[in-house]
Image (tube, rainbow over all chains, first blue to last red; front, side, top):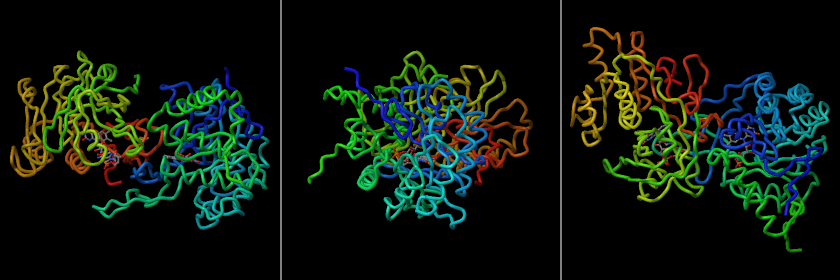
Length: 306
Length: 264
Ligand SMILES: Cc1cc2nc3c(=O)[nH]c(=O)nc-3n(C[C@H](O)[C@H](O)[C@H](O)COP(=O)(O)OP(=O)(O)OC[C@H]3O[C@@H](n4cnc5c(N)ncnc54)[C@H](O)[C@@H]3O)c2cc1C
Ligand SMILES: Cc1cc2nc3c(=O)[nH]c(=O)nc-3n(C[C@H](O)[C@H](O)[C@H](O)COP(=O)(O)O)c2cc1C
Ligand code: FES
């Protein structure tokens, strides 16, 4: 029995619901030596900014129980090199390419999306609003409903392609931010970005990261991600992409049952470059074993006591 | 160059000291492909804690038997678990990763310097230098005499060996940089000499300062905390004198020593 794995996110049809998360899969071909990225439903590329960024001082990463902290600092090649050097590598791949972008101001997000929207190889956008807004004392756009609204408006006016807004969990009321994004024109939401975290070396009394705090990812954040997904699912009716600590097909199923239409696999790529395709085959086995012919029929089937 | 991800059976594991282990694994493809200075990324435990792979230099590669050896110090939970594994257990390896030392056709003398567990890549390097028929000088500094081992085959092969220990229990009291200082003082000419250094960062910085301005090319093998080991996560950055960051895993781990900014 063939399982129909396709899912729809806005106007974007994915051939299957397993994507790789921004910042954990490079520009899409770095792991090609291990498997064919065309197996994936889609690739979300590393966050791109207008200018190239060198990134933060080191140490940039630290391990914590079942998790890792990073403060990479959005190191990336900048939008021009992305267009001339990175996107061409993805020509011919049978998978969706989702360009992830970030700006210092709401207008910069618009400029980036305008620059990329006409390119055939960009199928959709993921808007990273977890980065500092230079006009608001560096508070992340995604921590403020008004700033989120501004960014999404700027982006929406520049493209007809699917716009996915990536939410940060580091907020009091994620539903308020999610609603602002949808009202301003987001087609879908992805969640979560990393959780603010910190670790200290007790011998040296120094923080393990040069920047002191960073973003926590990996299995440690999966329960947080699921709860955030659940909160947003209860209040809004847009496609959601689940992210956070997904290491197995079972983890992914938790997100699908809770209401995710697709998932992004992040930190797992570092530990097992083949992890995303293993998750995909696990999902196929799950469907086959239960006689499920259409994958999308399992989405949002969480059983709640009424 | 093809990188592998493979589950590799343990052929043997022995304790060199109470903290230093030598682990031999069966992995013919990695053994065949590995070059000195390259590393393998080891999934020490099948659970998610510890989460990340651990990088270890290839310490020896036996193409005939299809085995590689790792030499590691037990310092935390990953290496403690690795030590508990016995023969027959398997360990998942990714590798060989990184760019090894550049070994050109030069016939010049090789000056190999290792601090502590810098001997892990250094031994493999010396093996290959000897295969190429190059004269080798080996300077090795450790904490104490008990951490000095495995030199017999190098002595037989004619390697000129200089030792130093922090506690003075063997060789010169002090560090390997003390050995280098003495060597530079006593050498009439540095012509036809090429340097290689592996060890902790303070030692690399000291070697950089000692050779600055001298006509001696030195390649240094660096360490930095890693996640992916393949250039994807941008986590293992090291600052260069140019002000740019390079990735230890994919641009290195071997760099021309004068290019690295050890202050940063
Ligand atoms: C390219 C390279 C080659 C290496 N080769 C060797 C070798 O041949 N023999 C050897 O004994 N050690 C080597 N190391 C260091 C080795 O990776 C660490 O000692 C090991 O990861 C410690 O793991 P742990 O779980 O016991 O320690 P923990 O302290 O519990 O580890 C916590 C985290 O910090 C990282 N970490 C801790 N110490 C280091 C370190 N010195 N360098 C980089 N990351 C570190 C770990 O990988 C892990 O992510 C190498 C490191 C690099 C980058
Ligand atoms: C090293 C690293 C770099 C990341 N870089 C980005 C980035 O550039 N843009 C972004 O939107 N998210 C970035 N993320 C966040 C991931 O895309 C993902 O949201 C997060 O890691 C949670 O998923 P995980 O637990 O599966 O890793 C990064 C995460 C890691 C670990
Ligand atoms: S460890 Fe990821 S880039 Fe080097």
